[in-house]
Length: 428
Ligand SMILES: [Zn+2]
Ligand SMILES: [Zn+2]
Image (cartoon, rainbow, N blue to C red; front, side, top):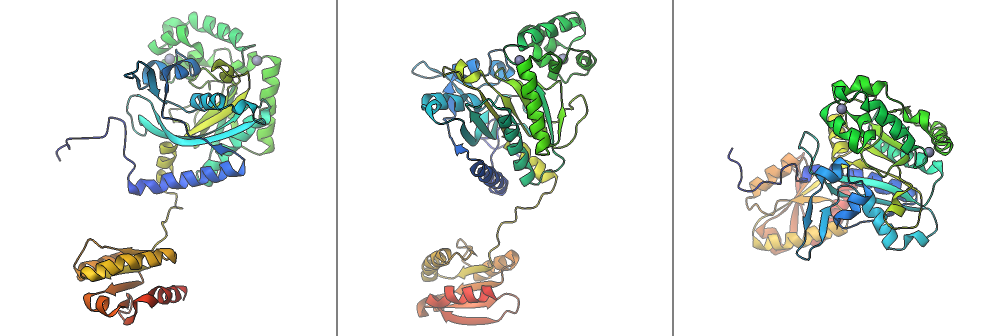
């Protein structure tokens, strides 16, 4: 087949009608849970000032260095398509005066993000995320509740064998010292590290811990672990988070290599995976991930306030739902097919369809076709119980034929009575 003249941008995809049911189902589950836990929905522009991300996510992160769609506007502003939602949500929180609201402020979102990553199976450059943010609360119960929310959502979507991987990466009190330890550890072994990790050693030493390269694994395994170097406050916070998780019986596993790729995290970080992966973390992508970001609000110009949140990738969840053949997505079927013949009948059919819609009775049609035979064979294939036939004669007389598809029996009723008549038939 020849390539069409125009194609979607590389790494981006259309969400076709048959995909929409998955997106809709996920949206429904997420918004129900958001309601239950008292989160308010927020939408932000897909574009933000580039500096919001370089400052918020961190200038040395892969996202900001390599993956953002950035451009200069006619007016000379530097803008970027959002690569994630947390920085924009925090920007909106500060800008709209939400810091004066009773704490905590709980927000959720659902929409596309953009990252210019190497295209690979299941990864898109425009991808959808949903997420939850709790702003203005430092208690560990919030960390546990965020994890619980994502766990519940994935479970409601019938995904099985979920496991939470969790770690604490400390705060401004204990992390600088830990990073120093880590740097000196890796520096003496620099020669054996992969080329990416050699760069990370200078730019962002924590990221070496989530390197997936074979040759870095044995070096990682001996590296000092963050949990051994937390300050008292971080240690007790983390302990509380784990106690809450035990309390609500969420299965988790400590993963000392979990650091997440963004600079703004402090203390708790976590990811949720569809099933247990090996000690090395495997190559499987997480379904959801997040953590605490106690310094971000101040960093972006707000009053110092703690916060915690997480996000999940919608396409990733959709592909898992498909792989696991999860069925909850049967579209309600219509039991009636409306066939018509001739102009007058077509006009009356349009009106009739509205009457059925108002009566909340599902009915399908094929107005584009003029042959009655083609329409009826379509009705047959759709497996409806009844076909309504509005031919030229019936349209003139103000009647309509009800055909029982199984028996082939036909009855004629007055057009204005047909909705009532069908209501009765469908109840039987
Ligand atoms: Zn490496
Ligand atoms: Zn600390």
